[in-house]
Image 1 (tube, helix red, strand yellow):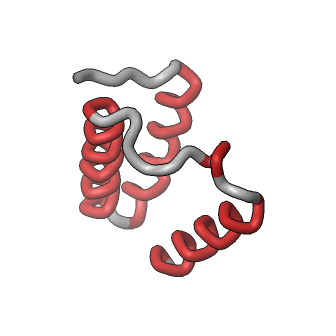
Image 2 (cartoon, rainbow, N blue to C red; image 1 turned 90 degrees about the vertical axis):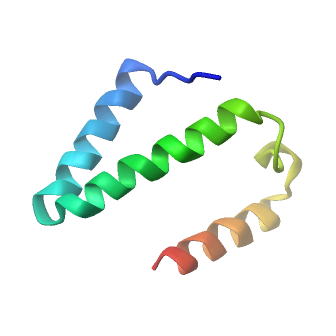
Length: 72
């Protein structure tokens, strides 16, 4: 399965990648690979996981907070 980005999303990603690459080119390459892997997974399994629409606002807040803490 393939996926595409809107022109706006592509521009945003390019800017993020350029920003990361200025200080850490290897991290930028890793970021691109991770984005690609996540998008491929989502394209191949579009119904996996939970939709944010089905989560309460408190569950969404906890989910986002936990994700931010694990990435910090």
